[in-house]
Image (tube, rainbow, N blue to C red):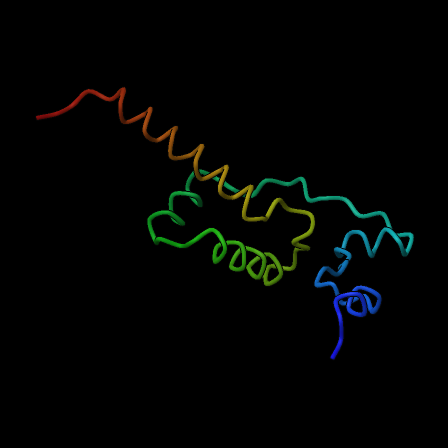
Length: 105
């Protein structure tokens, strides 16, 4: 039987350090930058909402679409948090636009 002290000494305490891809590339001497090109148009965001595509699924679709069109996805802002922020902003803009429109009865 192993005691808790033996487990701590063996390094199996449950927490492990797993370096990210960017950290690994920086250690190899490569300069890694985040994507800065925004591909989220109002139409694209509206279509994603209309088709009820989740943020996670949309990220997978957009990354593969970028690759299929011959682009490097790392040059573009394609991640779940950014997509969520753009979708929320787009929904607010649509709401404000519709709120200010005259109502036809």
